[in-house]
Length: 400
Image 1 (cartoon, rainbow, N blue to C red):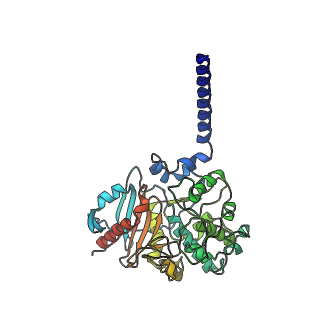
Image 2 (cartoon, rainbow, N blue to C red; image 1 turned 135 degrees about the horizontal axis):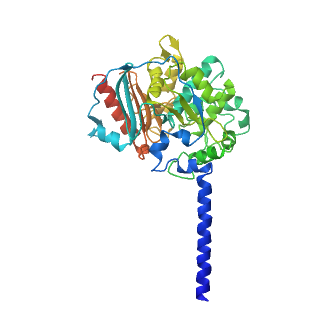
Image 3 (tube, one colour; image 1 turned 180 degrees about the vertical axis):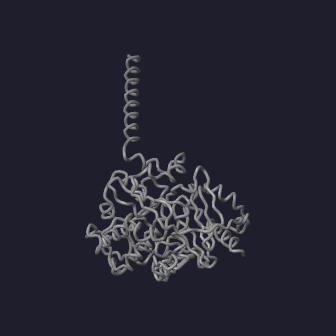
């Protein structure tokens, strides 16, 4: 009797093992797998420069008329000041799992390095740096008259959001992460709204349906709370207003005119919708060209690509809840403009930030750009230190 029971138990365990193996093999070959393994420690570095293997995408052509950089190599500072102590810059780059670093001063590349298998032609994923690109596209659409006013409600351009909490949110409040919509942006919680988004992208669920399920938490324009759903709403606004998909609008209004040297690509959901919250993929030099527009008043020579007044409004917030420092009306100590961050103790500098340590740092006073690609597991705690390192780099290459 005991032997029979043991045999039955063994058969049961064997059957369960087979079921689990079949389930694993099915999952591995399913559209869910990319979302599940995207941030796995063993895959991050490789995934972040090969997102074409993770998600579908749409190509964004480079330009036949490349905006050239000069070459003027010079050493970076050995150290920077942070938290009351001098720290080693090389150790910081190692510790933050840096995969690429590019420094530009007055249109000249003064430092360029690639790590962990990356190279000059690698396409680094932007993560939320793409939000700053999205902001630029919104500014262009306003200048063209495609969007009448950034005080227009989102629902005016996205009929699918009629009756939802986003319908009446002004475009400007989504630009400044002040929509008041309830959304959990906790990347450490596997069941958070933002992590669930990547699963829905892998399944092809429409973005409009996801946004329509969200509820309002507070009055729009009263509190700065970083939520990626606001950028998804803005992407839908841009497509609704222009009648063009985001990749095509980027290519014709920004990427081509600014003289990008390489083809970029923008990741999409399984349904083919471009992901407005993230996932533009480009070379470091082309990210630097984008940042350079913000150094040069939105112009490439005589060609005005971004409206100067849009650039100024994007990086100089005036509303109280958007100011840097200890702000009770904000969930963070950096200030926030139109998808650009403003550090504490402002020096006129600003930056685009993506999770896992992606940065486009702009210092107009010193005419310096720093672009950094990373796969930093400690990214949540590193933004302040990164600004300290970038400020030291900017001061050094500017000759201070």
